[in-house]
Length: 179
Image (tube, rainbow, N blue to C red):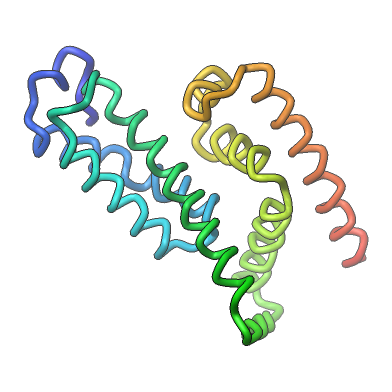
């Protein structure tokens, strides 16, 4: 259970973050996975965010907003990670190993379908990808997304609409190819 508004202010960093960790770890990791496309990396990012908030607990202006700070940290660190990867890819001389082929069993089919959706998400501009991840995977409101990303609610609506339309086009083409 996450600390309530009246509780978090008086709690130590250890107490408050222990509760935040128990209540929101998985949700934050899922957000990270949607942004960086790797479970291990997402877990590392989330862990680093918890450590950073713990180290700065006494300097938080409003400890009741620690979860919002954590979410924003996950988004920011994910962006940094993706920027780092793009630099590494630009300077890498070797090619990535080919993707393994999938079988016909249900698990492989589900994994392939999930990979197709994630690939389609990767093809979206960064803001659209972030808005869709926050909206549909974390179920945040437009106001919460706008506040977290520092954009207007209208921009959230616009990014969500454009991102969803682009996904429909890409995923529709994939479905047509498999028929």
